[in-house]
Length: 626
Image (cartoon, rainbow, N blue to C red; front, side, top):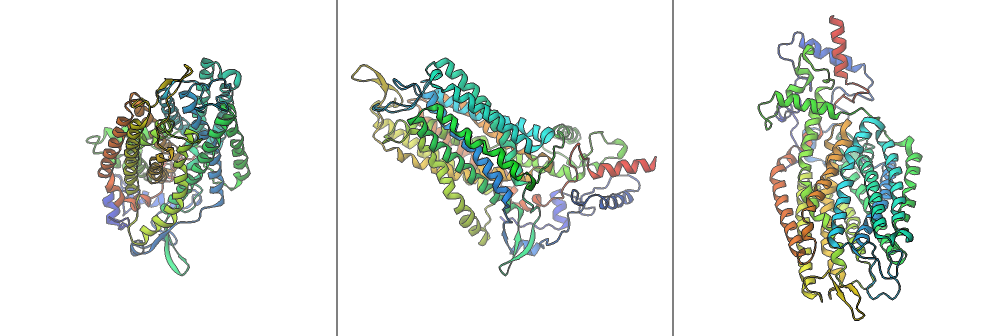
């Protein structure tokens, strides 16, 4: 399989991406003076501001020939300083979110330590485990999954607000404000005078969790599109570097952008999680919820200081309604839902006096929407991938608490996941991916995502084996998460199994590698395949898959307790394996068309605030003939 595609007129026509004879402006059947109208549209487009509209995507300076696409090495463009500042803002947000979310399992699962009013165990406690509500592992896993579910539904609303009303820059500020309010509520829920009252603490905790989910969702939908749109490389070009002709490929630039974006995500989550679990253990939950707020307050300052350097897209009005009308228009005129004839939605295929009022886009936007829908179909498999990932923040944290900790907090072990990601991303960027390109074996998006499924499967196999040995060595047998009555007649947690907690390393490392391969690539795929004016929306669909996975994960909650945890990990590993195989067979054909989809003609249509050039030409044409 190759990623170099013959982009001659025949290939483009076979792919159905554009009409090669009219450069994307399709002829209207039986429409008089069609040739004159096509030429008129082209001449009119030349008078439009060239900074905002490109009418002919067939030629550009430095465009590689077909031979050069097959033979020249592909490299990344420059990652600008403004991109790093946005990545730093994401680092602050991830410190805030994960620094708080890492506390949820212990806050809900374990009871308030004897004599404690902060949730931190007192000195001399024989089993020093932080806790507050004491609702058990099933409740903790349920809260963890609900947190993920609600946090990843909110991007849909956040994307709509950004695209239709406020723009990404201002929506990020709204998200920051909501998240700060959430931290204040969480601090109140864990304050010494509140935490000792279980019902009051739980109520405030849930309110704070919900608010943080809203802020997180609004933030996540918009920060990565804002980052990636700073990339000025939108087309392949040939340039000389160190005496070698190379192709600067925007797809590779986007791969690097999202790799280091994910690098910053994990630096933030790593520092937040490690720091806050020790604060939780030695001071209390109130301070652990408070500290993330301080770093997050830096985010708006960084954004404002760099605003003049950012490329900011204005809100364009909601395009979801227009997309839905177009979809039903095509569906009504197609033979079946499996055989869509998208040509019928091209304005150039519809006589001017027969066009619906909402058909204000151009032909190229139809192709961009088709490409975006293709990406959304790929995302439909992501809930299966996230099932193993979701085990990390709930069940695997609980598993660690049943092992020999040697003074290490049980929720510190999951930081092996971001540590492995931080270590592996530079290796992937500087060694693995370039090495494969040098030997003409490009690791294309569908291949990467498939490999991620298989790594997630291995992580769950390792978890199932570990859980089996915990049950074998635990003093409580197959009820390792239970309680016993000690010699003083007190009910205490079951003593841990005689297994060092660092034996749990393998699942976290495998999940980390899986994230790089599948999750990072899905971000890249969402941005590169979405229409220019719907990038936040398509990214939010990507993120919504995590919410679906969390909802599915709720079905596994009955398996999230003793003695069924081995079956829990085994069933998830089988589902991930089957999902990875199905994913490959469903989408492997897309790798062959990767270049052709990335190089389709760019739409002139922006949105309600600036209609497409094609519609403007048509209106002018009508006026001249009245």
